[in-house]
Image (cartoon, rainbow, N blue to C red):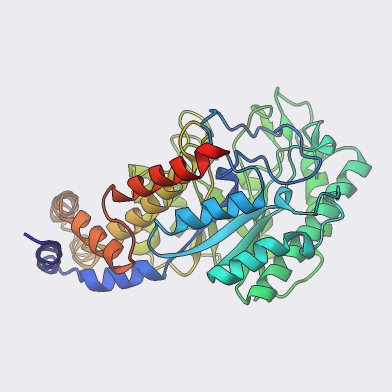
Length: 417
């Protein structure tokens, strides 16, 4: 059976369950996923005065071929994007400023220091997302930034956060594509603190100063990201999920849900509808924690599929912003990007191919037996054939064929670094 016949068969099978595969493919193509630049160079960044990673950030492994500068990083990302079907964005951190060899403080950054990223994104038709960088810096050595007891430290990071918001807005305005500016800080204690309240009060005051500046929302949208714990902050994190959720709700910001930032027994998927009943939008960082927030490469596992199903079931594809967030230096970094991008989009396709209308009808009628039976049966429907068709329509390799291209790229480019 040829490939077109395989897809036709899959289309007919799904049609018998009331699912339109062509419509699913069309909807899938419209969803944007933001690719994170820091996977390509192990979060090294391009700052002139770059130092060792800190703030609980750790990339493990020593696979050869790490990008050594912005040009190599963009070339690698460009190659990865060619192997992943669908619409994409690019997500960059402030520590990826390019200043022509001149040291520039993080509280002195300007839009021009990201001009090469903007020019590249313009050529590729991509939107850019942005993140202030509160780690890997002497002024973060104490483990505290925006919640530091040192006013001078706090003011430095407030200045950095304000400039980052302006830079993100400038990116959005220049590219005419709204940028998401996501704030995460590593602040916290390794052991049980005597005072949980004061750092959070200081953090609130810092955030109030940062977000007092109003910027056009069609240029930039602000998001804040909480965390359960981190390396060096195992017992107490100032910016917890509860802190940022309440702050975001009160101040009209997006809460960011990183899939690795919660207890392993928590379901990030369950939080989607709980939040979007009351909030306009959320940002999801797609990651994979293994026993802790280890930022493993995203794969098509139950957690990712459940997340995608909640997004699709709720009709939230235009209200949930999706971005990858992991860094693995133990495997080919370009392949890690491709695997994560394809896994995230496959999860969305699985969700779009679910016989939702029938499942909801069974549930509404109280026929929970039929709901469970159909849910189980749908797991073995030929989603793979629909995915291959989606790849063909987007002119990217289907199946594992993309790996051959990565291997050739490694031989001709990465191995020579």
